Length: 251
Image (cartoon, rainbow, N blue to C red; front, side, top):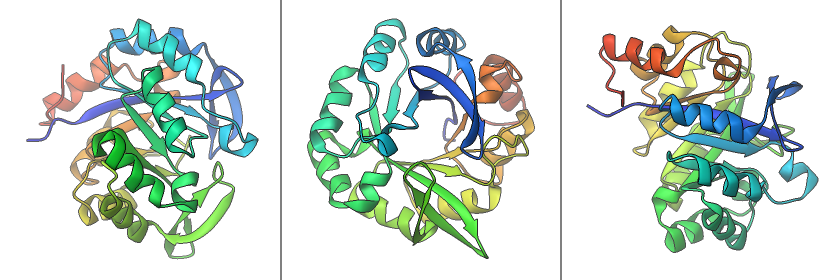
């Protein structure tokens, strides 16, 4: 049985961790290094650092934050936000990132996925896909969720896999910050349509939501932010709950 991963996400804005609802109404959640150290002690499986304003502001991700975090924590770090070239990809890895997530740049230049996979290995390449339901379909959004690309979410997930992405970070914009649960429907559809791991993101509100996204949604990992930042759910207790319900996790 596959080991399921629990991944806290640190959305970084102006050097601080923030949390919003559906990509808006940001609230300060603390210092990124202090929070990363806490999750390291709680035995999170990985930590995602997303510079949520980097793409729109045309600047690189917070490499200094990653450098500092890598000195303090032992678990893998994923960085995303504003990475659009192989050089920026390389700089992120050199700063201490185990994996690099690309979204807007990958849609605008899909060759970036295959080139990064060839140069750094598929396991380091995470295709971040922000999705929103438009009518009856799930569409891919870029530029911090501000631009509808018109791409079908499932078709794009299959394409990034073919291009060489080693993992998909699937974020439901509709569910983000609502605490009403992950979008099980699209998570399940994407998980069944690709062979690479899918990280479910957006909507976690309680422990049962994690269980659902692993069992029904077939996700390989589950990401959450505010739920962990504001101590609504403890990662250690969450893993014990999942294990008691038949989910294989690293305790």
